[in-house]
Length: 112
Image (cartoon, rainbow, N blue to C red; front, side, top):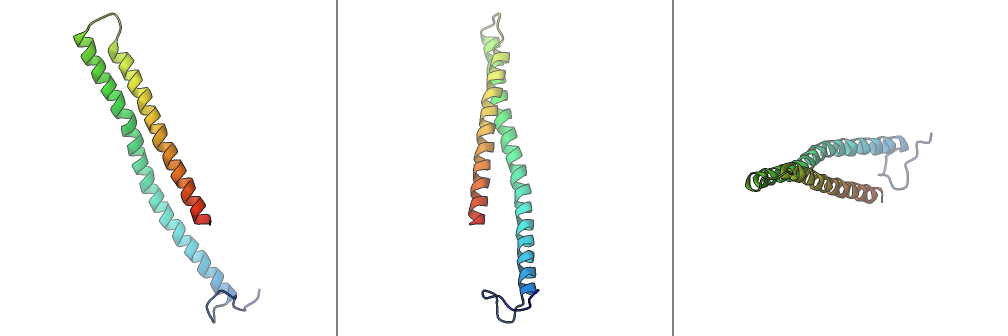
């Protein structure tokens, strides 16, 4: 292992100290990224949960109202609950796909 300074390093800095500095910088960057990822992950779980729960509950509430208002052999509550759940799942899929695209774009930008 050579102890000569590299061309783009500071004067008096050895190859070893340069590599140690690079590793330390990468480690600090990774630690910041983990913290950011944890909080954004928790936020994403909240968005996904609400995007499924709200349409499902709205569908069920509208179905209950329709069943009371227009009684019949078919259950509006069940039909609209399922429709709300399907809409909520589509919304959640949209949010997760958009977040995945953002993460991939950030990673591509960081590697350049």
